[in-house]
Length: 295
Ligand code: MN9
Image 1 (tube, rainbow, N blue to C red):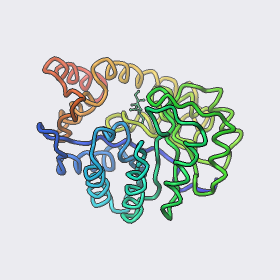
Image 2 (image 1 turned 120 degrees about the vertical axis):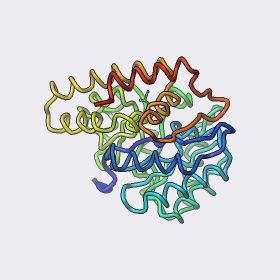
Image 3 (image 1 turned 180 degrees about the horizontal axis):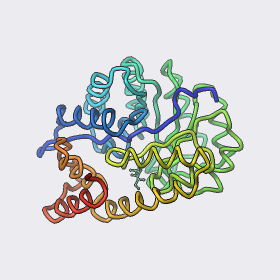
Image 4 (image 1 turned 90 degrees about the horizontal axis):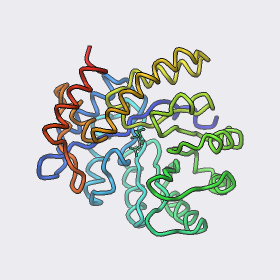
């Protein structure tokens, strides 16, 4: 494993917004501290889906990268998600994050239009060749509509600066084929509710939204699975998935924010057009928190 220092569990960082939709710097810093000090994560994945990134301006994305690096310093690993269907924006963000000292960048496959694989490949080459850094592909077919084959990943991995993939898919056949084909590349599991299955197949780590509130259980599942203690890992995945199922049916990011608010962290509002919690959803978030997370 060429980049073994990048292994581990990364929270997909939430962004705190105020009621007007502006970034709440203090709230963001509190979320970061909670992840490092209480959730004990190995790193943060900044500017992903969970950060509501695709609804933000370039300047706002930069502001989040800057505040996060300032709060984290070198305490945990940092990955900056810079993908965008505006590749010039991706380059600008990749350069900015690299200058700040991010350990790696990541880019979602370009979405919305049906880009050919050659176009996708050119997009990744453009981004990674603009910086002295490493890149992790962000593959999330259910949101982007982009499905890549093992052969296509292999073509992207020919570039030695492309070091891994965040695999947010339920295709465990493909995941197994990727693990076999790419023993030297980093593969991160992207669906928290499928972490045990991915861990059994030998992923190097995971990147998850729910680690912002459920970090210790995620750690337990990953470590137990790696020690071969499958029955114990399964028990914790069961509780975790009761929690995730309840969160998903109450609104994913808004519920995670409410659960943090209940712990005194100013995780704030969601960014429009994403809705923040209603009073009923807030009440339900409290029920979820008390049931699974308070102790
Ligand atoms: O980055 C996250 N993906 C999205 C990973 O938010 C789209 C996951 O952590 C999911 O939020 C989580 C719930 O489905 O597994």
